Length: 489
Image (cartoon, rainbow, N blue to C red; front, side):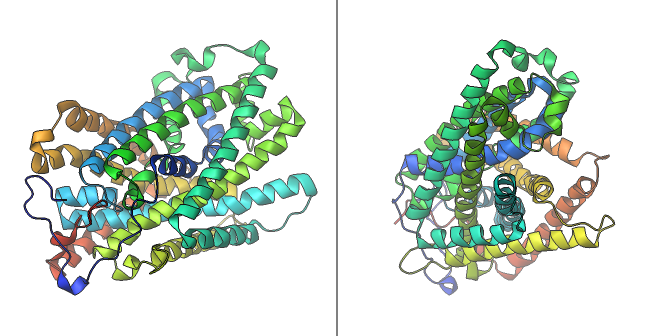
């Protein structure tokens, strides 16, 4: 489907051959919304992120989550508007590239691939780490977490290679289990601690250090929502993607916002508003489950296990498809653009994405062994470190997309340009992204976080340099950026 005002649709160069397509129209809105929320992984994200958020934002950390939910909804508007105009498995890569040209497309492809691989490395590691924690708690068995990580990751990849319908449905089922557990435990905790209930968690006066504490906790709250963009990369396999991708995004953000507020309120109430004690807990929500009813603690552990598996499946499924699309359009090596002839899955992209993340975990672990501390790598610590670095790169991609939206509509769809949807909201989205970027990159942070901004800047400059050379070598690249529209025959 041609872009209004953009001339005839561009096609891949003859040398590239006929691009391979994924199986179209096999997922409904409910499927991609469930997969998106599974990718967010509320149990996993909340279990390992809320203690740090509470120590930063204080008793009113639920208020910080409300602010983050509104911010992510602003970003969701950008994704929805782009997907309505040009749905693509390339997601942000296609949106930025169509607006700013092939150099930006290749740069975004590299940053997105690296950012998501690094962030997904944290999920892969914590999947085995959480199994180790659970088994050790209940049986005393303490097998190394890397064994469980390899087993769970291998099983998840096999499921993904069987087809998008099977793997997406499984991710949705796992999400259903974790949400049921989280809601039941939260309500039980609130009822059990009803004598301590108050509105303090929602009052700005109870945010530690006022606006400064809110801003410092904001990037941590935004990270709880990472994965909200999952549905856009599934556009090619979704029925009516121009409508359903946006609906899935907003539905997912709304449900996750309300859920996180419930979970955080139950947790701070369960700790009787003692932020110091909450911050010292390894997994505060499980401590609350123990304090509410011992039997609920097992359910909380179960919710954490299903959550990590759901994120593993949904995250790699969507993020590998962005890499796949970049491969078939020539932004990355064509090897990534291969589709299995029967199952119509991007086999090479899925396997390479996963193996690269595992190698990253191994390299990070080796760094711990050879570092001045000389100790083994804790998967919980790695989760925080790896997800932080990955988020830095992903935020740069979000930033470029929000800047691109008004320019794209002005250039390609001027008759549809809407001042609020296509200028005001993405401008607010830019401001929203700059806050966590500042707090993740500001000087004076502890090691290893102090060198993450330099690593992100180096990767950005390297990506721009590589993209510039690639476009000079292949002038036809400009024609292929965004040439494959999800719902085009």
